[in-house]
Length: 236
Length: 215
Image (cartoon, rainbow over all chains, first blue to last red; front, side, top):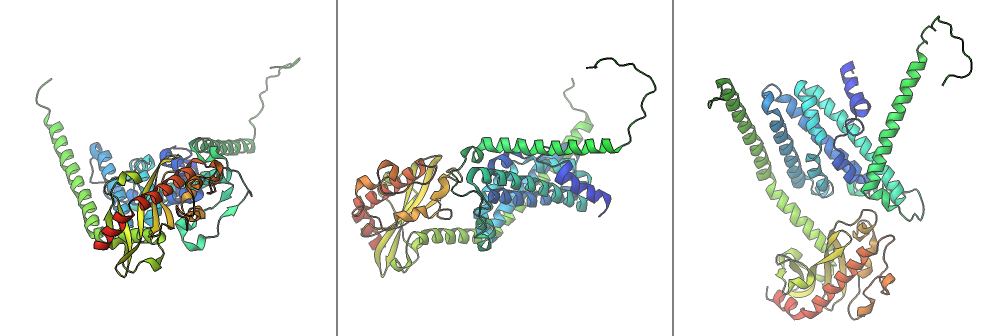
C-alpha cells in the first residue's frame, strides 16, 4: 500500500472518522443502533452506497461545472439509492425485507454527499473507491460498537436475531450476557443513543490526547533557562 | 442595474441548466430502466412473500388452492379497524371454504397501529396469528413478531367457545394471556384485536362463508 492509500484508510477508520470526528450521518446512526443486527444492516448498506457514489462522482469529475456540482451529486446519490432498492427487491427479496427500512435512511446520511464533495470530485476513481470503503467501514464500526453497547445495556444480550441478516447459520449466535435481565429501557430509546455516542467520542478524544502526551514526553525536554530564580514559599 | 445580464453569466447559466438537465434525464433513465427490468420479479416476490405470510396463519391441511386466489371483500370492515381495500383470504379445499384469514389492526399499540393477520377456521378456532407491521419498541414490544418470540402462538386453538369474553385479556388484567416482560400495552392491544377478529368472524359468519362459496 502506498502512503496515500494508508493515509486514506487511517482517515476513514480513525483520524477523520465520519461518525466520531466529522459527526456526519448522525440521524440514521442514532436511530437504528438499538441492536447489533440493525447496526450491521445499516453499516453494510451505507458502505455499498458510499463506494458506489464515490466511484460515479469521481468518474464524472471532469465533466461537471463547479456551480452545479451539488445538485448533480444529489441526483446521483438519490438515483443510486433508488436503483439499489429496486434491485434488491427484484433479486434478493428476503434481504430487502431486512435491510429495506435502512435504505431510505441512507439518503439522509450527509456523510455520503460530504465524501463526494470533499474527496471523490478531486481524485481518480481507484482512490475515491478506497476512500468510500474506509469511510464506510469507519462508520460501520462505530454503528456496531454503539449497537453492541445499547443492546447489552438495554436487553442484556449480544448478537440477538443475527439470523435475520445472516441466515440460519447465525441462528444460535445470541449471547445472553446477563441472565434474567429486566431490561434497561433508557439504553434502547433515543437518549441512550445520544449518551452512548457521547461516551464513544469522549473515549476516542481521551485516547488521542494520551497519545499526544506520550509523544511530547518522548521528545527531549527543552534546555532549562539559565536565569536563576530564588524561590521562597510556593508559587501558585 | 441593467436589465440584461452580462453574456458570460447568461452563458454559464445556459451551460449549467443544460448539463443539469442532461444529468436529470440520465439518472431518471437509469431508474426507469431498473424499474422496467425488475418490476415483474418484484411483483412475483411480493406475491410470494404475501403467500408465505398467509401460509403461516393457516395450516396446509385446510386448503388445496392458493390462499391468494380467493380474496374476498369484507363487510363492515371498520369493525376490524382496516380500510376498504383490505381483504380476507379464504382457505378453500375441494371447493368448500374451510377457514379464513382476516386482516385486523390493533390501533392502540405502544407506538401506533399493529397490523395483524388472524387465521380462523369455520368453527371459530384460531389457526395462527402474525403481526405483519408494527412500530413497537425494539427489545420490548417487538416480541409480537413470531421471529423474535413465540408469544403469538398462545392464541392457537383459542375460540370464543373455549375462552369466555372475560378471559380475553393479559394475566395482569385478569385474563389468560401472559404479557411479556417490560411491556403491557402491546400484548393488551394485540389480545383485544384478536378477540375483535373472532367476534367479527362469528357475527359475519354467513357472509364470509357464502361469498367465498360462490367464487
